[in-house]
Image 1 (cartoon, rainbow, N blue to C red):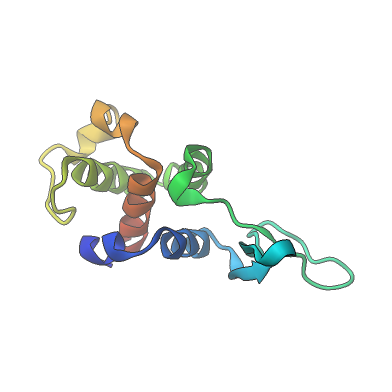
Image 2: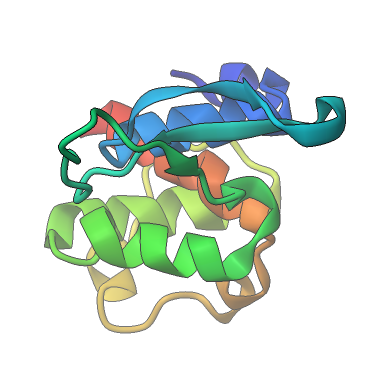
Length: 136
């Protein structure tokens, strides 16, 4: 996906995309009490119960920094190449540039991520995650 496509996604669409990239399955809106709709699915580490599937609430990745922290630790931090690409994409998104642009010091980001990405919003982190997973 390109940055324009990712930015065009609504928060709910971005939430579903991130959940699917993290391994969630059967992600969809469930109608619960008082006509409130809630996004539910099967977590990647979730087991099957004897009476069938058990669907749980999907974290609100574009609005919750704690959920983003788990997202970042789950797939990106384990792979050096993904981590460097994620930092580059996040830096570009925070700076408002095009994420396809090559950085001259990508390897330096492994040791010292730019301080401005520490203030990135949850939505910006999700956008960088989707871009990174699409490029790897």
